[in-house]
Length: 122
Image (cartoon, rainbow, N blue to C red; front, side):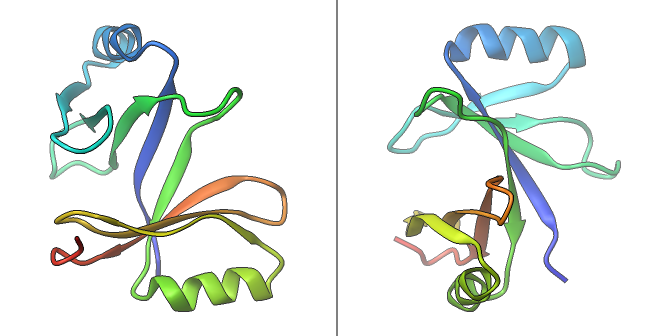
């Protein structure tokens, strides 16, 4: 069954946001060595329940946090989303060494992400 495995927090001022989450919750941040400003967020020890996430510079006004769902087949899931009335807003793209991602709006206009793990993605 596909599960939420990651969250993404948009921030107008990433430095300010990192300081906020470190100070309030004790989360740790590590800058990701990728093509965009992105910080990996660790929310606690791996043996405790919960998920980790990411923080990025806000791309659009009003953008809100996004939950990312792990799927076995991105293409099959996108087809199912569209058949059920959802709409893909960011098509399939590679995240080098991680996998394939896409973003969609559900029938209630909530943005969610999809991740198909594939270390060979380029």
